[in-house]
Every structure is written in structure tokens, then in C-alpha cells.
Length: 230
Image 1 (cartoon, rainbow, N blue to C red):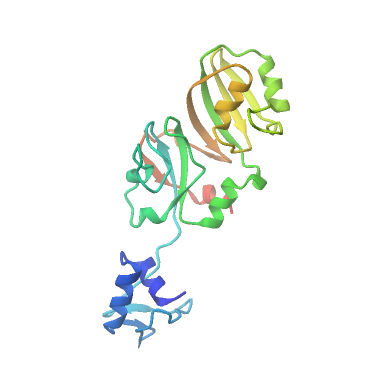
Image 2: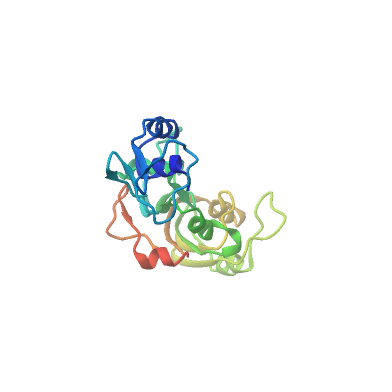
């Protein structure tokens, strides 16, 4: 890794600020002064600024209970970003693995590990996502088979992949899908003549939303949860 990048990832410095610091001669790599941002930092090297040792931030993995009227984005738009809820350093270098609409609540996974998040969102991984759905009209039992066989979404050429539908109450269900098409859950129910009134994601892969979390609260993933997508 380049020393300028190392400084950015171990401090709050921007790339331009890191380069200015290097010019002062206060940065050393294994005791040798480094003034060139392109200098390489060996894997086991000790990087110091005025004798103070630095270390890279480790990769971070977070689950958040997304509240309504927030967005899964790194910038605020009409609604605020969910990243406002996470009080850790350099949070805006993290990204959301599997987004939810502004009006949808529930489990969101956030990380700065690109390879890990790819395993969550890649269609080739067939990662299961379970949603609790509240509907405008009562569900008929035949909907279970319809979703299992795949439904035709408006504007799509192919049927959706087989999905598991569990009817919890006349107008409440659990739906498990392995895709992530645009507004897919809402469109699937629209395809059978119903309307989603509220939507809440409960599970991604083996990771379930921690029942101890309230909307807007978060925690780091456990080692087992992280390893589920490695």
C-alpha cells in the first residue's frame, strides 16, 4: 500500500492533507523518513508520525435496524442517510450491502469490505432475504404456489425465481426471495393483484435482525455472522 493511502486509512486525513504531512518529514516507515506519497509500506512495517505509531482501521461489519423515512445511501437526499445512525470513524467510507426503499424498515448490512458485500448482493450467490409483508387485501392460499413457480413482473421477460411465501395472517406474510430486482417484493404482490402496505426485512442469509435493536440502533456483526459471507 502507498504511504499516502496508508495515512488516510489510519487517520482522519484526506489524501491532500496526507501529502502535505509527508512533505514535513514527520512520517517514517520502519524508522526511515518518507516524503513521497508513492512510497510503499511493507505489510509488517511500522509507520510513525512524530514517533506516534499508526495502524490501519480494520474492516468493519455492521447490522442496522433501518427506520422508516431514511435512505440507504452515502449522501442525504429527500430523506437522511442511514449512516447518520452509526457513530464510528470514517463511516462514510462504508457502503450498504443490499439496500431498502425509504418506506421499508428492517435489517441493513453495512461494511467497508467490498468482497464481502459482493457475496451478499451478487445475483450469482442466490442469497436469501426474508421480508415481513403487510397487504391491502387478504391472501389466497394459491399465492403460495404462484410464488413458488415464479410470477411475471411488469416489464420483465422472465418469471421471478422461485420464492417461499408463508401466510401468517389474512393480510400478513413472510416472503423469502433470492433476487434483488427493483421494488421486487412490491411488484411480486402487484402481479397477483394485491398491494404492499408495509414492508420489513428480517433476514439476509443466516443473519437475522437482532431483536434487541430498536429502529435506528446498530451493532457490529459477530464473527460467525461475518464468516457466513466469506
